[in-house]
Structure formats: structure tokens, C-alpha cells
Image 1: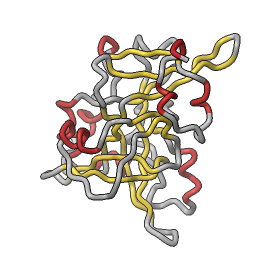
Image 2: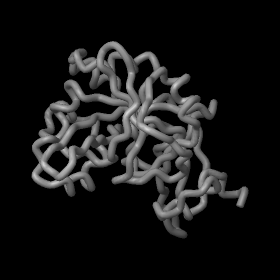
Image 3: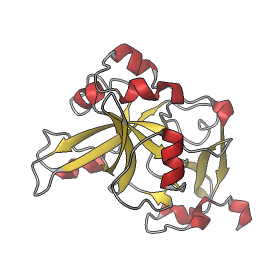
Image 4: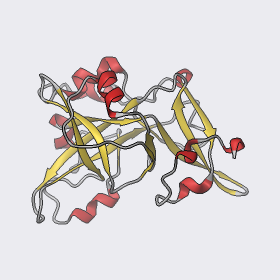
Length: 223
């Protein structure tokens, strides 16, 4: 699964890298993004890319209660086109979820040790996500979930799942709401090439979502 991640780059740099328009206010560096919080996403309309803030934890349009979001922070790639909560968004409401690292916890004899996973070139990247709109509350809610797949060689000794990280060459097809080749889209939901990734242990201060400090992303041996 993916239950915590980071996005520390400036909005200006992100706009240059991912080529999107954004008009929803300030974006601050985030060192410990947690479920139920608003996160930066990119959607497409077939012509341009638009940055949107969405709540992390999918609330399907048909849900009776938004509390379902707590169970919907991730969507397994396997069967995503057939499960009731995900099949409609997968057809036409796909998004990029921007990050520059994510955390997973490894079980050890001393307890769970958090690790941060990054790209070797330190550049931001994009998780594959799907989103939906819900209109049964007092205010409309736009929410999303991160798609997960099996591990690669970098993540497998820490966790048996990892978020789907999309290649830049696949962004256009993924974001195009009118592109609906389901089998092709499912083929994109693979583990990211391990040779491009790295990991390192971090402080267990990241365990609490209340902690939101730059020191959280420092390697453990630097404390």
C-alpha cells in the first residue's frame, strides 16, 4: 500500500516539469502527507493539464457517506476495471498525483522501521491515480486514490506492494478522459524500474502524521 508520501518541490518547478496550469492557491513543501488531507493532482481534458487539490481517500459518486474514504486511500491495480468503486473513474477520471518520495515500513525485531523511497535523480514523479466527485454532503467533494501494484527489487524487502509510478511518456494517454483502451491502460500499472529508484531509512518521527518537518526526510544516520 501507500499511506504516506512527500512533495517538497515548489509549485513553479512542478509546473515546469509536468506542464500544467494551476490556480488554487499556495502549495507548501510537504514532508509527511497523510490520508484525508488535500493533495496536489493533475487532471486532463484532452487539451491541457490542470492542477487540482483533492482529498486523499476516494469517495465514489454513489457512496452514502464520505467516511468510506478511509478505506479508499489505495486501489489495487489488479481488477481495477471491474470493482464497483473504481471501474467508472478508471474509464474517464484518471489523474497524476505528484510526489518526490514515499514512505513504507519494514518489520524488524526492534519494531517497524520507516524507509523513504525516491528517484536516484531526486526528481519529482507522478503516481497513477483515479478521482471522483461526490455531491451528497453539504459541499461538493473531489477525492482521489493512489493505484498500487506489486513490488520491484528496491521495495520488495520492505513491503509487498508499491504505488504505481507512471513514466512521463504515458502521461498523455493516462490523463486523456476520452482514451479508453482499458487493456492498454492496465498495462501501464506495473512496478517502476528498480534501477531508477533508491531508498534509505528515516526517523520514526514520520510515524505520526502530526509531524510535518523537513528533518523527516533526512537519512536516519544523519540525526
